[in-house]
Length: 599
Image 1 (cartoon, rainbow, N blue to C red):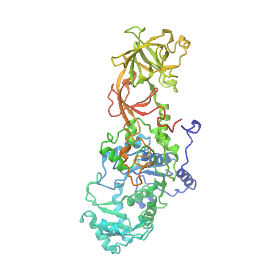
Image 2 (cartoon, rainbow, N blue to C red; image 1 turned 45 degrees about the horizontal axis):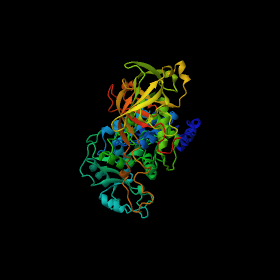
Image 3 (cartoon, one colour; image 1 turned 180 degrees about the vertical axis):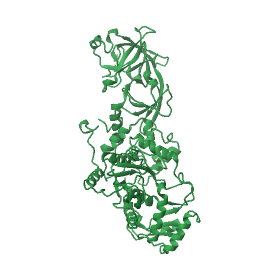
Image 4 (cartoon, rainbow, N blue to C red; image 1 turned 120 degrees about the vertical axis):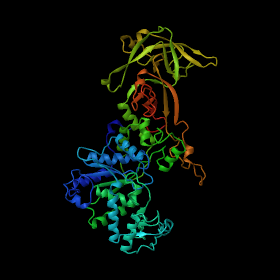
């Protein structure tokens, strides 16, 4: 665990340093903001932009967000908030065949859940790439007119063959020198739907010999006869992401376009495109700049979209919101907190160096935030009956327990006490080992928030299994009463009244994988061995039990989080809980059980 005196000190963040320097230099003084994005002519007449910086989070709505996206969300929205700017939520819906409204809704929910928004009293900064499709077509036509784009009629196989390699230059397309008029005619006919998918493609004319493969005449528009979830059948051509993304940034006056390191090789095309469009008078300067940072890499998880899809489709997990998956919707259902994710991102910082973060760091961030926010309750997860033989049958009384030891203002709650209780099975040993201070014949221990009891024996079934522990209580030992301090015992037991307990399903979740690097080659494995990451699934990643809980938990609302004293942090499942019948999921244990990380 990080030293508490340093826990609020942010880790290094080189992008934050860049923003501070840009603002100090008044780099964006000439920027204009028209209220909603528009072409250069509209923005030129607008008032100066009141927001000093603009960032954006641009997810593609074709899947559920995972832990890696949380880093980008916290970075983009967090920087904008810190410096009095704006962050746009923009859906890059350039692929009509993969996008669904379900994913749009889930992304919006995830961003809000993490504590961020794109609306204030002046602006609603929710956008879609499809908002700009008409402009993108116009911009493509401008590139054709200025000789910077052409229609290629090669097949996909021919284009791949002529692209070259990392060590060999590509070859010019035989269609590269088509006239402007011919390219304009073909592109108009592509838009009109005259050609089949793949018959033609619009490419930027840059340099087929460039050492950066991304500058070897990249595709910018392709034919797709598909219905788009927002624009319907209006378009037969759709922009490539690498073409659309910089245009969206420019039209929205984004100042700092922040992405992960795999897009670093795309930055030269990002700059090339915006410069050509600005030269044509279609965009205003200063233009956006792209900055890359290292993505979030965690042990014990897989963040590959392909592997996540495989886990879901092959039913190794129970859906995209399975609490074991590293999706944000899964994390929410598990009981992880948005505060924990924000703390993690501050703690690991933002650099350009790839690093691997141990999963225990994430878990410790969740513990810290849950320790502050979660009220305490008692749950017996492996119940064993305890009978207080000298307590009157049919009688009960109240004991009182604090709702939160760090927040006395939250008061105390009543816990019913009766003759028969549930205790944890591990709290009794007929023949105790050395150092064991809980119940065994002749020993005394305190029932937490209740009385001191002395063990007098146990009951067993025909097979010799203990079915009940027998005790006598000391009537003058009740916690909170004057006589309680007269008894000094080492054992302290958690309990619930058997007559009042709430019997509930409790799911004990753990890490989905049992090794830090699922699917990685291990020491001693043959060099040519390809391991299946599915072989590393932890068979104990989900254990379902029936537990006995204090009666106050019966009224828990869906997504309400608690510390089950001694056991960890739990949440009432947001899907399966019913009013008066919550089901609980374990978010994280009280201590690191994997042998590292927390202290």
